[in-house]
Length: 465
Image (cartoon, rainbow, N blue to C red; front, side):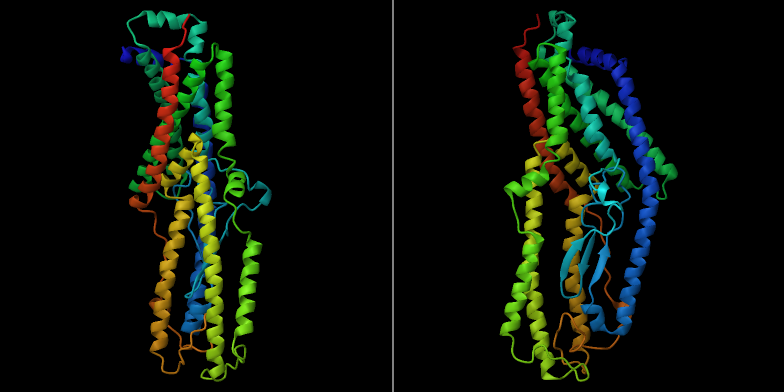
């Protein structure tokens, strides 16, 4: 009987006006998002090529000056725009996308290619994830909010249950038909967007990108299932379709709008951290203490003779200042990361937030991508420092007094740029994506099961008369 119910409900959905309107809306949205992405991606890639060219030219010039110039000068590495940004932009225009480093430290992160207009910072890109998060979640509710209460009003629910069909099969058929119908709509929209990206885009569709598209479709189906369960719950709790619609809209407003956009409020209220101004004051205070306790002559400088004892004092003081600042700022960065991650777990009660986190992991972007680049740059910084120290050790004209900010007391010989280790961002491997995705997947499945179970219990006790 489940198949019979499923077939009937699917046909009912396909022939309904809501299906046709939803299909047209989603296809138009996916097409507009794909066209917008292709257009902006070309400009973003060109901008990144210019930035990367300047970055490499700057490093080459420093290497031709001296190995110490290369080691002490701060560089800024900017992440490349992702080819799968049309699937999930993951708010990367507003997340850090550049890291400042030298051979001695990874200092900070920044945003180098955000919105040109600061008044637009709260606007989202028309990516597949954004469309699905708002539109698809609403459509899933649209297909289920009157699945029970609406049939009760038309007197067809009692007639259906008069046949040899269990309430579980009937509710399950309605649930499955809604999920399949919404997933079909998403699939048509995704295929339309994919064709536009292939035809108008500069890059082809790789196997990795195809896998990300499939992962997105699976996450969208899970999102549709979760909101379909909420729609069924609204339908069996209420006694008429109008009340069911009001409850469904309440669910959508809470889980698709309010909770996902409350992260800043939750973070500041539950997980407060020091402000950037406080951190800077702490750094300044640490510098002041070190300067007061430094041996006399620590700030003297005469670049004419690198072997002057004052250069060793100066190098020691500069190193202590670097380590003090590094300790303070590293602690601050880790606090920021913990605050962000803990807030994410709180907003994970929202299916929309879970969907966004899942697609971020599937597409290998957003916060996960930044953290990998941040950690990899720490590894690269250590490699660059080891390379520089080896060059300095081989120079008999160097006093080998390491100063992380100046080129006075270490090797002044140039180095061939081709010998310098280069950093290249590596995409997130499958193992890097599975862990975070699995965590949010488990939460989502649990939430879906809980909501559907409540809907089932309510339907078992539902008066169909």
